[in-house]
Length: 320
Figure 1 (cartoon, rainbow, N blue to C red):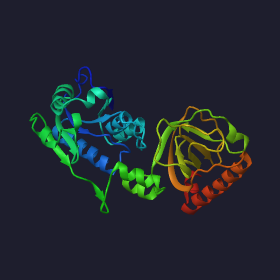
Figure 2: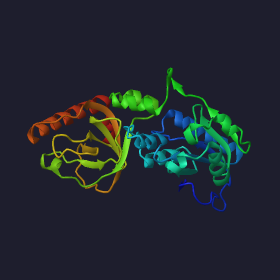
Figure 3: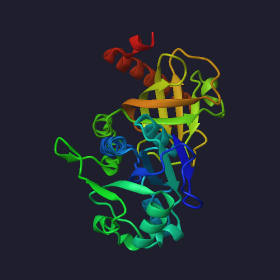
């Protein structure tokens, strides 16, 4: 999969690659089941039309950009850019264009966006957008604006619903914020997970008998608390444990979120390793304790509760 950052310069493909694109556009935060339906349709259309299946996405998202401009709270992100790219690759996308959403792009008229970006830069021949898609300055562009271009075919993806509920990133965030991991999984099509690279920490966990793999997060996630987790990326079989996600209020409180994972029956150096942490069950919310001894006792209870949950679902046999 070829990844291009920015919309400046030539849009031509490398020699030997298809010259034209079947494209879908969106933020794709979380790459949930509705997003996957759009991507699958784009891949199918590309195969039928002998085009290269591609995604145009934005970083930051337009909503994040305008929220920061207004000094308003930014909605939690469901996924990192790296997570999204991996999902695109797995789904068969061949090219991803990451556009930096800034003041210049936000002021581009719908007609200029079509001409400069879709036609001249990306050579789009087939385009898929959602039924609520708006683009260009002040969101003036609509599907009708796109169809007036006459240089590419435009297809509209209708709302995806499951059991009568609209699948959306907002819905996934709400489920995770409520601690309803099952509802989030239903909308995502998979359990919610966070990927990241393990870094050195303060080593406090090790001194109290619970060494943790620490993953600092650059974005505020939509959930926090103590969870039972499955970890991939440390060998051919998954590992299990309990994790704390949040600002660590008891000791050295943080200003940016941290994911700290205590792995059961595992004691190997994994600094620098990229792992995927999948959230299986929420045990409790974060809490501030009066001292390290009280915190240590609570972590011990969390570990026991985590092992009991994993035994009930037979997960520990998976790691054996």
